[in-house]
Every structure is written in C-alpha cells, then in structure tokens.
Image (cartoon, rainbow, N blue to C red; front, side, top):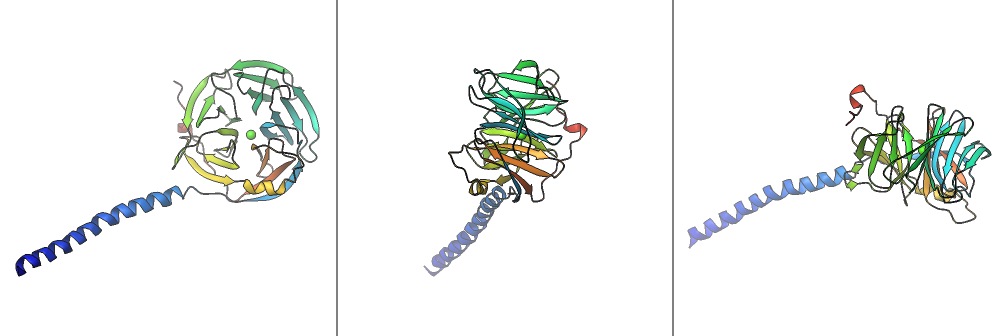
Length: 284
Ligand SMILES: [Ca+2]
C-alpha cells in the first residue's frame, strides 16, 4: 500500500509539472497574441487650426494642392466639385454634377482633377484650372475614395479592398486587401496618400486607419472622435469624411459631411514608408 501510495504521489507531482509545462506556453502564446493585437500603434494628434467649412457640403473627396483646397461633394442633385480658399471657406470656383450622379472621391494628377461617382461606375476628369470636363471613364465597382501615390490612382469601394489604377487609361493594376491583426478592415472611404502611407477614414466611424500600400497591412490608427467636441454644429452633421494633406505645414486637414469646420491637425511622429523600385506592382 505504501509503495502504491508513493507511486501515486509521484504521479500527481509529475502530472502537475507536466500541466505547468503545457499551460505556460499556451498562456504565453495567448498573451503575446493579445498584446500584438494591441500593438498596432495609435497616433496622437493636436489641433493646430480650425477653418470654416460649408455646412451644406456633403464632403466625399478632399485634396489640398498649391495653396487651395479642392472638394468633391455628394448627394443626387447636390454633387459638386469646388476650389475652396482654406482660410475663410470661400468657394472660388465650382461646378454641379448632372443630377443622376452622386459625387465621390477626388484626386489631382498632372493638373487634372479626377472625380469618382458612387453607383454610377463613372469617373470624370477635369482641367484643374478651368474645371472643364476633359473625359470620363468607367470602373466595375462602386466608387468611394480616391488618392494618388505619384504613380497610380488608389480607389476604395466601401469594402476592405483598395484598387490601384493606371492614370493613363484607368485600367486596374493591382488590388490590396487591407487587414489588421484583428482581420479585414471594411468600409474604407476617403483616402489620402501621405509619405508612402495610405490614410483611410472608415465609414460611420471617427477612426482613420494607416495602411502600408505594399501589402495592405494596417500600421496604425488615429482616433478623431474628439474633434466632434470642437464642432459647435448648429444642425445635424454626418460622418467624418475628408482627409487632405498640406505639405507646406505637414498638417492633415480633416472634416466631415455637413461639418461646419475643417481641422488642421498635427500627428505625433507620423510614419513614413520609403517607396522603392521593387515595390512597383507587376501588371497582370
Ligand atoms: Ca483625400
């Protein structure tokens, strides 16, 4: 009996040691995964200036270029393209889209403005100076946000996919799936390419996601929900939508649909991705 009991005690001790050996790595793996998920950096920001914004502008595209703001707005019958003076919000020049088009993202390439439409699968190309329409093109998805990386147009369509287009003929060059450590990021909307990083605001949230254009990996976040407390809106506003970049100040310009203000914000230690020749996508 004594021998058997000793054996039994020994077995319990070894079972305990084995259990610890098994549990510790599992616990470590879990805790490491959790901490990695939390490790996508959240960038802080400071408001540097607040500018007036047309509170009737249903903002869908925002670009800052050569000292002026360019804005595309949406809604059927109210969609427009505007050149705006940042300091006082004065609309210097503008055009209305035909009623059947719902305007979406805009960007500027070689002195031309390109504007997407939502479910009309049509992009318009205008002369930057005169706003004369030069041509139009089609694409197979919904049109949401648009930006330019210096080589390709990058467009969002409301999903987690970003599509790169050749600005010469608007043909598709490649697509990337935007993915964080917690999974795909859906509802990518207005875009801005800044120093090798794609900034995208996410529809119906105040979050901006920072994306590596090489592979779609999320490399950071900015939470702009605090901007709402500075809005002093006298009527109902809609979602945050609108990211532009002023290269002269290094500040981002952030607004939303029907927001009465545009915020110039400085991001703490903004990430930079250097683009190399080997990053260029091969055409399929
Ligand atoms: Ca933009």
